[in-house]
Amino acid sequence: MKKGPSSKEKIDPKKLEEFLEGNSEEIKNLFYEFRSFIFKTDKKFTESFKWNSPCYFIGDKIIHYLSPNKKHLTFGFWEGGSMEDPDGLLEGTGKKMRHVKILGMEDVKNKKLLKLMKEAKEI
Image (cartoon, rainbow, N blue to C red):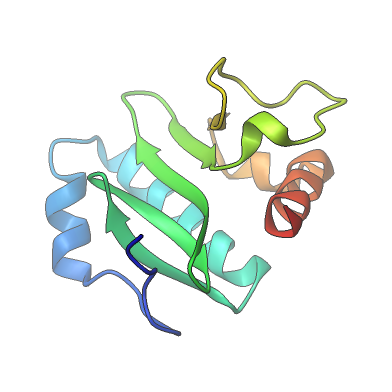
């Protein structure tokens, strides 16, 4: 298994610009703001492209992925299928991954999302 990125690593800004090319300015801005939020939730997060999407690691373990869509961001939980989700925030039906649609930065104020993010790191 390939290891995750080294400590403090982030994707090169030019590669992120290329990745976001073709998205609306609104989605690009939301992506950058939400990406900053991810790093603020835990200083141990590192970032690397995996399967053509930015993924967020702690050590060698993938915790999240972030993908832009036309009207929202898909914020993925790598082990979401095995997480408790009493509030029904997680979407998806696969065995492993689940996601939450991020429509705006007001979503980061949702304490239920923060609770899921904390749980994701503990699995």
